[in-house]
Length: 330
Image 1 (cartoon, rainbow, N blue to C red):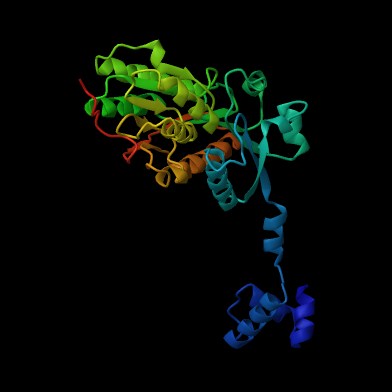
Image 2 (tube, one colour):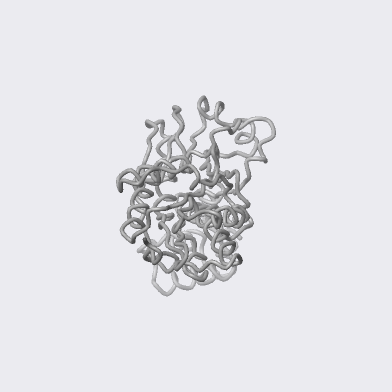
């Protein structure tokens, strides 16, 4: 529908209809209301609105090493927050697995008309990393560390936060604390491992390699780790993600262990499900809304040819029922 169509139907001049649609002051409120009501009821879209729609640009949310269909991972909520923040800046967002890149990152981005991307889940062995270092496409990495002219990063304060989790357990009498690694080649998992070791050192506890289990970022890995840890004397286990913790709790309970009476368990992410499992999970809350906002801001900054940045976001430890005092303390 065009302005002339509205004018014809309402028996008004084209100039009067145009003024009404643009909020002019030299026509009556009655006429203005009549025109606006008719335009709305018949789906009229102004030129400015059409321009906004056609000028909407595209961003990509790329992810790797996770099952995006699972409710128990950080990808779905992070993607949702990122899309919401991007829409406010007139960007649409498409969620794609890294496996969608068949030829090269540059080719994939150009072919799909993406202006930039937020990438989550890359590990240190990803074949994409060498290309990203040299890319001229605005790119933000989540919980990773890579330097490039067009690469910015948003990371959690993994090391200090994990050290604080270990200290919290120590304050509750735990000295034999296990750790479940998500991926030896994961930057974020290695940072949290470093925090675990630092936390032990701060509390004068000797590191024991037998208390470390190398798994994956999935629930099954936690279930498998439970079988390993019941053969040890650990009284608490810290996990690099909630999804691993959920599997661990299920695995320990199936083997007759009580949580937290026999073994305390902690996670990282504060997924919605962590508050509803039994027992509820002690974990670290990530401010995903803030992380998403920062990611969009960094992409816009890179698009304006500003210097790449690295931003670290503090997490908050949330104490729930999966941890408690060491009742078996000697």
